[in-house]
Amino acid sequence: MDYFEPKTITEALSVLAKYGEHANVIAGGTDVMVDMKYKEEPGCLVNIKKIPGLDTIQENGASLQMGPLVTIRDIETSRLVRERLPLLWESCHQFASLQIRNTATIGGNICRASPSGETLAPLLALEAKAKLAFRDGEKTEAFISFFQGPGKTSLGSKGLLTEIEIPYPPKGSHGVYLKHAVRGAMAATLACAKLGAVYLPIFSGYAADAVATRLQDAEATVLITADAGNSSLQDVRIALGAVAPTPIRATKTEALLRGRSLTAALVKEAATLAASESSPITDQRSSAEYRGWIVEALTRRGLEQSWKAASGKEVV
Ligand SMILES: Cc1cc2nc3c(=O)[nH]c(=O)nc-3n(C[C@H](O)[C@H](O)[C@H](O)COP(=O)(O)OP(=O)(O)OC[C@H]3O[C@@H](n4cnc5c(N)ncnc54)[C@H](O)[C@@H]3O)c2cc1C
Image (tube, rainbow, N blue to C red; front, side, top):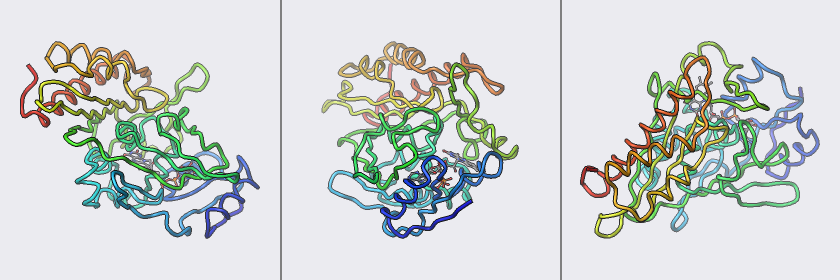
């Protein structure tokens, strides 16, 4: 296996172009090293950690720009993220163990494209964008189209994620990140991959102890903006993780809720609709039906909690 430590993005891109699908980028290595141990070794490893400038968090007007080498722990300990992007902060706070958070990068979490990747549903709800570099130029793409399937992104094998741009939510927005897990922080969502007609657990190659700590059924990120009088929902965003081949936005549910006053009956209708927008699987740990109920419960709870935070009132 060949190994490279490029010092610039251009250098990294030319190695990727040369080795094509036999090359593997490595950042923190918490996914790549497990794959190398339990699956196949790549033809070449491209370690991007020596490229300067990819590990900063910067405010830029109404958004925050993050390098892909920012670690989950950097995010968890950033006051700026905690104050301005609490949904992303919460997902990083609940992410694995301290050891993993110290090493794992946000870029690795994104490019792994696991349907259960902890930061992905918050990034969808926040309408974040990816800056991608290819040999023939750069492009910026919203994450909603960036994720194309389990382990698949619009980067292909020849591109690099070079920046994540996260707009601040509108003033007066409130939201929650909720995950249903067997064991709190050391549980990651039980992700599933649809290969042809069959869904497979994506972590099947992991060490048994790692798999044992990763039992989780679903996650939901809800972000609402109430109108000036706190009487109706001006905007609502709902992103779901681990219940479809990619993280998804529950767009029909959002449309149902937008502009309406939140009542218990509407919350119930929305939660049922959100479950129908997901496409969870049945596997050895959980049934599709159960996962659907979890989506329903998380959506209901997310709407109720966000509404309480926005208006100070319970949904009745
Ligand atoms: C014990 C354990 C617990 C875990 N718990 C969680 C959890 O709770 N939640 C969760 O979401 N994940 C969890 N993970 C998975 C993993 O830690 C995360 O996905 C992590 O964010 C990956 O980041 P990394 O820097 O280690 O990525 P790497 O392993 O270095 O890379 C991951 C993938 O991204 C690609 N890549 C990385 N950076 C770039 C880039 N800039 N451009 C293009 N491609 C790139 C790599 O080629 C590779 O395919 C866990 C893993 C382990 C081993």
